Length: 153
Image (cartoon, rainbow, N blue to C red; front, side):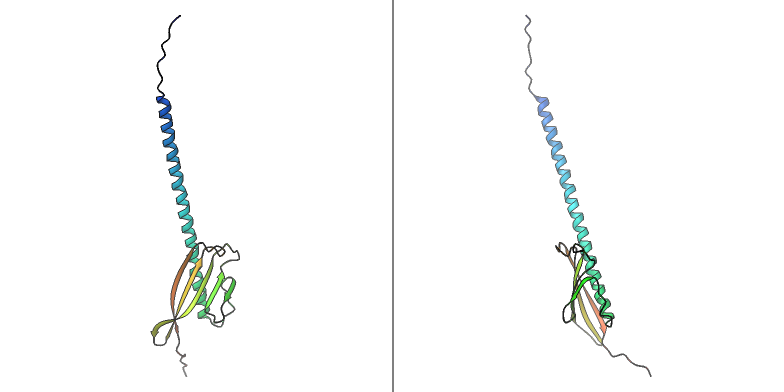
């Protein structure tokens, strides 16, 4: 009978395989995390843009109502409400509760320019009416001629 001398296997191949698999798993997790954070940032950017344009649309609509005081029946969007004084408004830009909505207030300004009346329009847009997940606001100073029109004879 022959005596077979077996070498001791040290398991170096298994160790290298475990290290390579671990590094690849860590790399895959890191790339997935980066992609997920990018998705969250882009979604926040979209929500921010929707709320900004809602605020801008709301302010422009109220300016239209100020310029055309005889057209009080003009509603800027769905579920249009205003307070008793007519200086605070809320409405949705479309019919769905998940769509953008806006809250606008009109206040008398402090700027004193002879013959001009300053109004400050503060508009806050929300990307989602129901959750109000993102809010952006703008403030517009609007000057209205308060002088009596001069009639020419």
